Picture 1 (cartoon, rainbow, N blue to C red):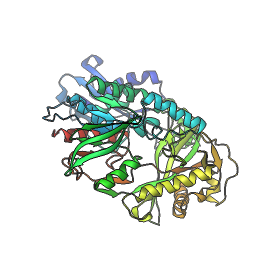
Picture 2 (tube, rainbow, N blue to C red):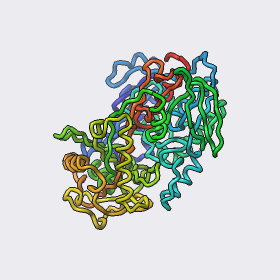
Picture 3 (cartoon, rainbow, N blue to C red):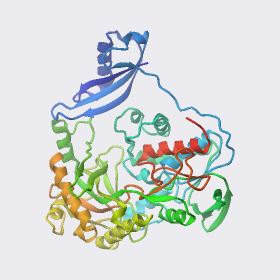
Picture 4 (cartoon, one colour):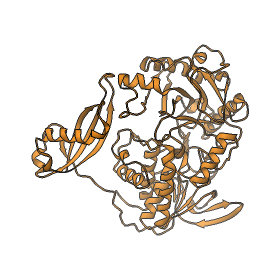
Length: 529
């Protein structure tokens, strides 16, 4: 198979003619007639918007053709052979327990099930359908279900997000992950888009279907079931104590995968008490910032704004400040919503979410300040208390009813509280309270955010528009700890205990978490890849 790269089309063509136009380019590059080409498919698609009046779509395509070798050497043409993830034999027979059903847990369990190990997945939250009802109720009425919310439940925190699959990780397992997503109901274009996303509305169906596949393969998924205790003897895992609806059950196993997510605070404390090696890691906290999506589109795409070929535009900004801190945007949600993401009573946590169409009026992004262990007491879990302090202050400042405290960017930069909103209407529900965010954020966070905003405005004009809205507090961007593991066996200092994914400190996002889940399954089964 041939891969032809760097094929460009100006982004003003009829979308229905996309493949026809690409085929013409391919024939011209290879200097062949259409009948010589056996098959033709898009393998990558990205946007080049460096010239605002000449935005282009850039493609790579895969072509099957006779006498392939004779075309290798033409500019941007190379030989390419696709490879599939191969199921290998394992000598492992014990039924493993996977704690958590986010991307890491689901893909770990899927691979274990494919190898015939019939894993038991334990999830403290609800199945995705009941979970959605609980989340919707919280967003509408402010009634928080502490065990099943935006952080906990089937699919993990990623279920209620933009569903980004973009990752800096380059890994041979990614094609399998994308294939599983597509088979479970995600759009096929995620296989070739340079910045693929699924959207929360589609993710709900996808995670349900992946769970059903695990069950068809012999796995078991238990919802509303909490791991209360790890049973350890002489430094070796012997089982887990589970609790569901007040009833306890002990499961014997020599393999427990901890795919617990970055918000499983009670589990982190349990692991500390058990002597599991952990270290605090750098993380970040800050706010969500909202603009009109049309204004971002105009800045990013110029005269091509509102082009259906391009969709809603994105941005990714950062600033390295003289004080040594970094300020950066994270999890930008085009046409999205700021959502209430608390998992504990009397706390306000913000996050971002988009539906697949990304058709909302506002764009939002986390705006974060880097945090190091020097910013709190240095204790292994000191970061958790640091996060809690901010979340509880935000709850009180918002009115103690799960409303988010918000402030206009212009007022924030001028050190004055906001009394009313401007023309950008916040998307956070159940509601917002205009106020002064200096009352819930540490001074160094406020000062860094101000400096970062001014730097970012030079990179994206209008970023500090007066009426842009800041919502507090964004505190769950990543895990505040790393659960140490052997790089070869993936075990902690407790044999048979496998920390995995974002919560353990080894991933950041849906795709990298899924990759780590597969790697963890392979290590558990002692399969070399």
